[in-house]
Structures are given as C-alpha cells and as structure tokens.
Length: 169
Ligand code: PNS
Image (tube, rainbow, N blue to C red; front, side):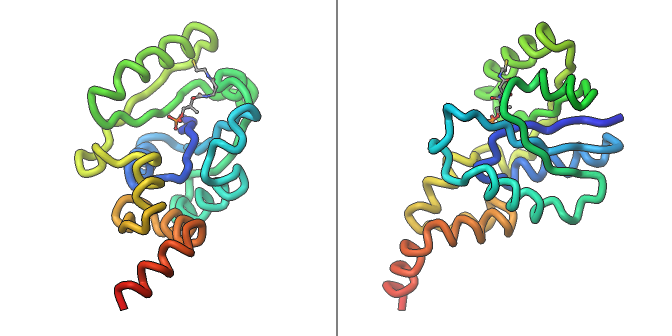
C-alpha cells in the first residue's frame, strides 16, 4: 500500500524524519510531498526548490521514499496521484484539534484516510518554526534536524554563525 506524507517542511525536522522512517516500514511506498501555496510564497525561510533539495538529501537512504511537490488542495493531489492514504505525525495533544479538523475535512471532500503516527517523545517539542528561530540566532539545532537541514540552515544564517564562531575564539 502507498501513502503520502504532506507538509510544509521548512525545513524537515528530526520529528518529521522519525514519522517518515516509521511510515516507510509500514507502507510499501511513501511520497513526501511539499505542499506549496503561491499566496504564501515569501513566508517560508526556504523556497520550494531548497526544501525539495533538503528532502532529497535527507531521504536518500530510504529506498521506498520519493519526494514531490504540489500547489493546491491535498485531496486534488491525492486524486491525481491515485493515492488514498495521508500520513501525519502527532507530537502532543496540542496538535490534535487541528489535525482532527483537516483529517475530517479531507475525508469529506476527498475520500482519503489519514493515518497518524505518534512522533517519538524526544521530538515532542521540536517544530520547524522553533528550529528556524533557534538557528536564526546561531543556536545549536544539530540534534533537532537531519544533516541536510542543518547544513541548509547554516548556509542561510552563515553571517550569524560566523560572528558566533569569531566570538567564541
Ligand atoms: O507541515 P504543515 O504546515 O503542518 O502541513 C500542513 C499541510 C501543508 C499538510 C496542509 O496545510 C495542506 O494540506 N495544505 C494544502 C491545502 C489543503 O488541502 N488545505 C485543506 C486542508 S482541509
């Protein structure tokens, strides 16, 4: 059975990687799909191509995982790809209400099922937003993201990191 793991992935975190890796052991094939929205362009730290490059590098070791992108409704993508299972990760109860709403709506408008995988508690408090915030001040995010994301964040915030390195001698 095939599944789709959709998200913004700005950038992919260790929590995402945990959910994806476990999904790749359950399903025959998993497509990680960056959902992008022309109206939200510029609101992301990484543009679509950068996010796809990071994802390709971070998932290269997973033979049954592919990377894709789509601008539009997730259910339209699912129909186009002839897929019917969405994977989403749940970190804490706080994720539940939002996820419950979109899972129900997606099933109503697209007849797709959402399968939830509980992210390991180690990653409960890790989000792309917090990782971006910490990295923007030169903080250490190396545990929270795969190497490809960490390298991309370092490149993005190179000046901050160089200043920090100089201060620390
Ligand atoms: O990583 P995120 O930001 O939590 O992912 C949310 C995402 C991209 C999966 C969700 O916003 C989405 O599916 N967007 C595509 C547009 C869509 O289908 N919206 C209707 C959901 S009911």
